[in-house]
Length: 277
Image (cartoon, rainbow, N blue to C red; front, side, top):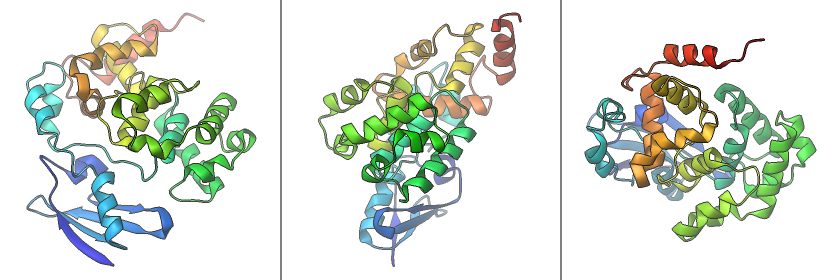
């Protein structure tokens, strides 16, 4: 076992980022790592080996200085209140890109709690925690359907893990990695955003069409979007920071920090949108 004290680049809150004060993760090869934040803001890390400590830096986004994001958008009319209130928020990442891909496919247009249930069942079925591309590729579409995935999504996941060298996307040219994912049938903008944020550690792809973002759009615009992809217009002003902007907007919306928006208003718009029986 090894111990280390790490100071993150820029503003950082483990409690906001991981939603827990003591974070733990199982890594490939039966390795492990855990972290807690000290009073001075640094992180105390315990791990099975030095390699695990290094991986924690990526998994917790410790080396990503998001100071520019805070400078640029702290006074933004829509995003500003969330940026100011949630200082130090980032997003945790998965140990493998394949795990992020699994999470992306499981979460397509269903409630997050149900998506995580299916994700856990698939991981148990593939027999590896965290799941690797090779382990997931051993599961047939029928087996994935048995885990709770809809047939179309099961086919998408099986095809993706067998066809695309997902781990290589971390080191691919930045201009080619996301377009490579976008060419895959069944992998839309939201799935690309999840894989970019949680698997590749990128902030330039937003969570377009996220169900909570759809509700935020409805609350702000007073109408339900005709297509979930319309939510892209909420993220467009944030350019290369669209992914992180998604994280702040969704967290801010859940806490009532987005001006002019509320879950109650979204429900009213949704009710008015539903066609009469």
